[in-house]
Amino acid sequence: MGKTTIIAIAGASASGKSLFASTVYQELVAELGGNGIAILAEDAYYRDQSHLTFEQRQLTNYDHPSAFEHELLVQHLEQLRDGQAVAMPQYSYKSHTRTTETIKVQPGRVIMVEGILLLHDPHLRKLFDISVFMDTPLDVCLLRRMTRDVEERGRTIQSVAEQYEETVRPAFFEFILPSKQFADLVVTRGGQNEIAIDLIKSKIRQLLAE
Ligand SMILES: Nc1ncnc2c1ncn2[C@@H]1O[C@H](COP(=O)(O)OP(=O)(O)O)[C@@H](O)[C@H]1O
Ligand SMILES: Nc1ccn([C@@H]2O[C@H](COP(=O)(O)O)[C@@H](O)[C@H]2O)c(=O)n1
Image (cartoon, rainbow, N blue to C red; front, top):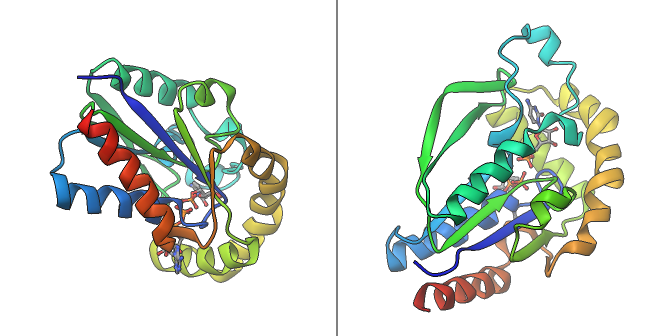
């Protein structure tokens, strides 16, 4: 196998990172088959908190870099780059901790990883060959997060609003927005920007053909 290319997709919560990454992945898998492309989520690397009570887990700041086990993500990306499969943790937003399951991720010519603080961490940045930043207005992100977190993550509108004010918005300005300078490609209109999706797909097709 040739050199592995690692593509990072960063940006605010609910900016469309996961929709963007999964659209690129699914469309290429439908076209070329699953071999050669792998996809990881930074959220899977939230620290395990199974030793804490649910009430204690609710106090964690999930928008601060310390909430993530980036050391493990770095290790897994390095292993994938070196041709070894990894066991990606699985995370539950409802219980605020990892589940007991893991998913086996096979190495590929192209690895995509998406998450809010990927470009903030210099150790991770060193591993990325291509960095994308989803530049979606924060009010649009909040509205999308409100719907998604109530429908999919077991939250109430009030809890989403409180968390947004307390940690999500401050962390956006402290950590996420300043990391935009490290992106190669800045994408507007979230996970449905077809031109940006096509650009990344073309790049991946080209890498897979080399
Ligand atoms: N361009 C878009 N138009 C409409 N809805 C979108 C768009 N991009 C993302 N969404 C929706 O917004 C929500 C958050 O998107 P998601 O990809 O989960 O964001 P992130 O991974 O950045 O947190 C999801 O329900 C997704 O389907
Ligand atoms: N237990 C948790 C863990 C994370 N969050 C929030 O998730 C956001 C990051 O994920 P996205 O898919 O939205 O990028 C982050 O802003 C955390 O606040 C949470 O609410 N609970």
